[in-house]
Image 1 (cartoon, one colour):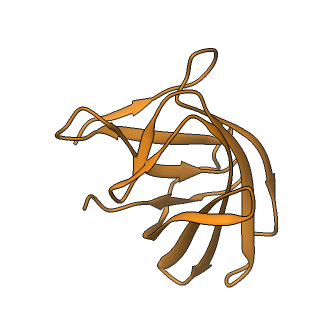
Image 2 (tube, one colour):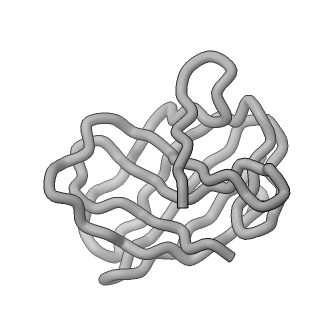
Image 3 (cartoon, rainbow, N blue to C red):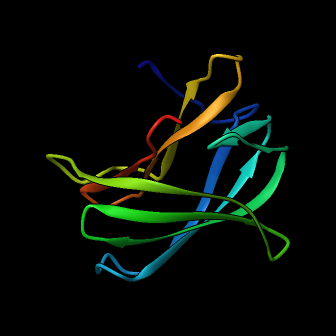
Length: 120
């Protein structure tokens, strides 16, 4: 699987803010803005502002995307440990079979663990 990381002007996603602690079972949130369409587990996400949240429990996490207080997409994710802490907040995408940008990984600054969203 090939990952595409989109950042900057014209990017698919810009992570704006991360809040919460790294403790297991703690809900973490990230404000984000999509500039181009994307998908999460087959749910289309139009360009706009969203709140991404997740709760990790051991090696799994529940991921939720909300817009204007309404849940618009959910997914399970695997919590994967990296060798070193992540330098910047970022979201990675894979190109789906239909050409859509599919959210595949969430990385938060200062954390060694990342969330990997399995392909459908």
